[in-house]
Image (cartoon, rainbow over all chains, first blue to last red; front, side):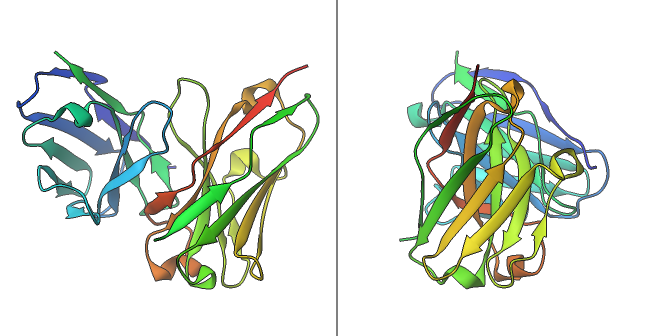
Length: 106
Length: 125
């Protein structure tokens, strides 16, 4: 099974600042990597698939990069509605999720 | 718009079974796969398996083999997930999700979009 890790576990950021979240796979997943945002009491929402393609309706301040085993989600200027937990998911071999990064207000 | 609407919360005793439904609308049901994901309280996301809405093929992780069954009813565009021999650590919110690409009718690995609203299953004596 491909194991996904995410860092940091918690990221404290001020509104308007840039946030950089990391995701690492235990073996190559090519570009078969997605990012999700989850707010308390809500279902996850797809942000990015194919490592760098924004899902429909996702603002341009969200961007994804990477391939193979190392991936980055960047939120260029954090808005109040962006404080949430972010999960990465590989879908190269079955589906596995990372443990999540919580982005909270500094 | 594409929407998945799940059945309501359930409370079950250890050893019982639960069956959660997921009704899809806004797209042709048989052209995408459906996956199920669960989330224990305060925890992360765990993939529970996939079903092709095209041909009914399934794929489950080894951890749940023998306890989980996923089915579809194409006449009502509804997917079902049944989990048997429930334990306290099965307490979780259970989500269905439409898979992202049309190739998901043939392969179990894909991104998920959108997700259902979630169904809380509580296992308690």
